[in-house]
Image (cartoon, rainbow, N blue to C red; front, side, top):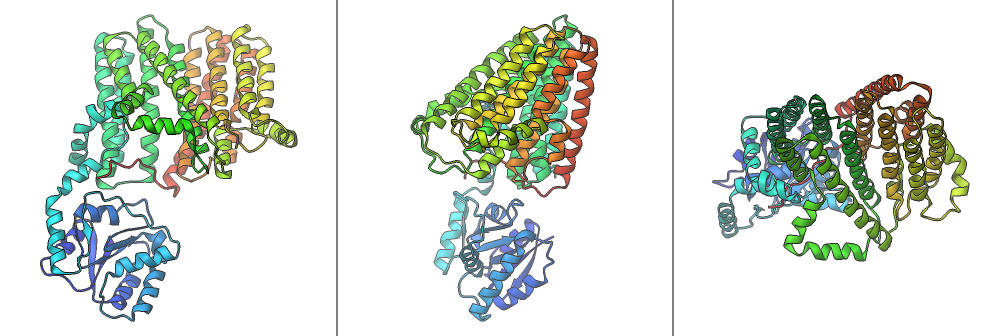
Length: 601
């Protein structure tokens, strides 16, 4: 139970007590600052506590946004301030200082606002939600009170709440084909006590059923799979809208929402490949290629964003042109559509699954994703080359974590550390690209079972060490992690295809899926300011260069059939290690929840 302390004299006809109780607060009344301080001291430290001016006039949703969001230790709106346990000490200090200054006299102005001013003076971060058209005020006289009450009446609280549940920057398909009705599904779920995590799980189960339908290989199964995939996406939108509508954010929910999206899509690829196999068409190479391409696209996004997260002097003519194009309405939607975001991508997959064949679906997916990857990466390269930005140690650390270097690469990096300081700034992405190309092309151009891929993998480990031998602060150093991902995944794909035996490509699909999960998990930890996965985990699964070398050695020493078995065992081992550690971390850790905000009211 949370506690709200109403400060000052109650106003006849005010609904503030009832509004606070409807939000789950136990309401107590304090006539002055001294009594408010006493009541504050009596609230258990593990509870949320709020100070609210008894004269407050505003929408209930304004109070909800200001006083119930679980993501922020301290938050405030005009006339109200709240603290969770992590912010309780700062609130108590500010309260004591204010009480000492005011001498415990009857409140003349808003105690809550004075405390927020005191917190700001201390340099304490206080979250202030964007209220938009919502009203939150402490009127000073009857006329101002009447005007504030009229302003509350003029704005539909529920309409604003529904609107703000929708993300402000979604794709065209999501914005116009899903969100107009999914927000009402979110409200229906909220009114029946359903949680975002339950909706997220329902979305996963629906996608898995869709994959199972696709795996039947029948036209009816493909049609059902397409319909269910869209239904899964509707639920995927609904869970975030429900979280924003009811402010039910959680660390576990953020992790589930992020990881389940990848699990749903890649499981669906596997279902399509199984369905095609039932019809006599082997498309496992296409399915694995689609997963590799999509994962590398995401790594490009993550690396670029982390590299520029807190860059200083971050200006670029290319960025200015992009902003200018965004000022023209229709170009915004075109640019969002051509990058093939999840809504457009899933809609395309669903329609093509129902109307065509898995092979055509994968061809379209590969062409669309390749174009999108080329477009976005080229734009980001131009931005990086034309902007004058100084990247921070935090950005360099994030890129190093995303590189996923194992013991071999780290050892070579240490050996090259002094020499790397004298190399040009473009060295890191160049050697990462060349080393990756060498191992993938060697595996592709030589016979399966030969020694040359092993030699190329050893060279790749050396170049990988050189790539990360100095902090990744160069203009294009954000390309290092995606180049390394492409090299590792591409090597597994090529060797499995060259094995040319039943089961090799499905086993490779499982291995890449397990490793990709580890890489996504790394991203979500960094986004949550929780740091990278523990060093022992990276060492135990070898790092990207260790796994690449191991796969080439297995291909050289084993027969094609034995190689398939080894890939399967390796996939299971990696999956078990990374899943157990990931679940342990996200269930028990205090990493902050990460959710996109809805559209401002």
